[in-house]
Image (tube, rainbow, N blue to C red; front, side, top):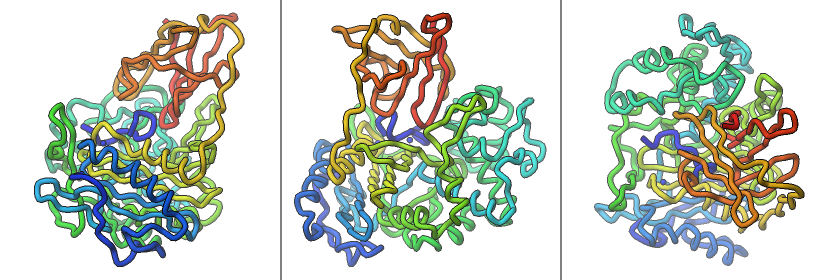
Length: 473
C-alpha cells in the first residue's frame, strides 16, 4: 500500500503524452493564464516542460500539475498529460489530487492554532485528550506525535491494515489495532515516520476544537488561505476536476488500488490543486495562518531525548535544496504522489503533483525545477583523508516497518552503501560523499559513524523524515 511513501528520500510517500495546452481563465493567486509562458521566463518554462514531459512520454506518469511561483512572479502554472487515461481526458487547469502526507502540515498547523487558543499544549501527555490510550509505560506528548518520535507502531506498516483499508468502520477499530502493538522504541529516543501518530493528532484536534477534522481544516485553513479547490478526499463523492489515480505494476500503469478515506484521515486524506498549495505556502509562511510565535514553533527543528537535532519539525521536513533552505513535504497514497517545496529566503514555491504512484517521484522533478530556477547548489563534499575500510561492515537497527540493514563496502577506492528495503536505493551499492566529522551522504540521507574505544561501533542514519541508531554487526 503506497499511502505514506516518502517522496524525497526514497525517490518519491508515483499521461497520454505532452502538455495539455488547455488554457485556464487564471491560475489563482495572480498567476498567468495556463499554457502561456510568463514573460521573460520562456527558456525556464521550456526547461520545466521538458522535465515534466519526459516521464509522461515514457508512459511512467499519467498526468501532472506543476506550479512554480517566486514572490509575486508566477513562472509557471500548468497541467500535463491525462486526468483519465481510459477516456483520454487531458489534465484540467485546476486539477485536484490526493496529496497524501502533504496533509500532515495542515494537521500540524491546526494543532498550532489550537495551541494559540490555549486549547492544546504541545507538552501535554496525549492521554489528557485521549483518555485510556495505552502508552505502555511511555509518556507521549502532542509534540512527539507531530515530529514522529512517539515510538507508536505505524498502522500503514501493519499487514492487518491491508484488509482494514477496504472497509468503512469506526475509527476506534484502527486505534485499537495499533495501540496494542509494542512500541518501535522508547518515546523520544529515535524517529520513525508514523501515520498512527498523525491519526491520533486528528482525534486531538476534534476533541479540542469540537469540530470534525474535515470541517476544522475547511473553515480555519482552506478558507484563510483562499484554497477554493481543496477538500477532504472521498472515495465516493464526485468533485469536478479531480484527476483519476493510477498505480504501477510490471505491465505499466493500472487503476489505483482502493483505499477508504476513513483511514488516511489527518495523516493523508486531503485533496488539493497545485495552485492552491502555492496559496497555502504563501498563507502559512506569510503570517495568515499562525501568529509569529506559533509559526516559529511550527518550523523549529525537533530534538531527540539526547539533544540530537532532527531535520524535521511538525509535519514539515527541513531540507537544503540547490544550496537553499527549503521547508518541504512529500506525499504518497494509492494512485498519487506529491511534493510541496517552499524556499523561505527566496519566497519560492515549487509544487509537483502526479496522478500516478510509480517509479518516478515528484521530489526529484521538483528538485530539478528548483535548480533550474535558483541555480545548482555548491558541492558540500570533502576529500576523506584516511582509511575508508574502517567504515566497512553491516549495521542493523530500527526502521520503518522492518529493521534497517545498511552495508558499507569499498569499491574502486570509494565508500559505497547498500540499504536493504529502502525503496529504489535498496539492494544496489551507491557511492557516498564525505561531509566531514565521520559523516557521509547519499542525496538527502546522512550517515554519521560513532566510535567506541577508537573503533567504529555505531551508525546514525538521518533521512530527514527519520533518525535511527544502527549497531555494527
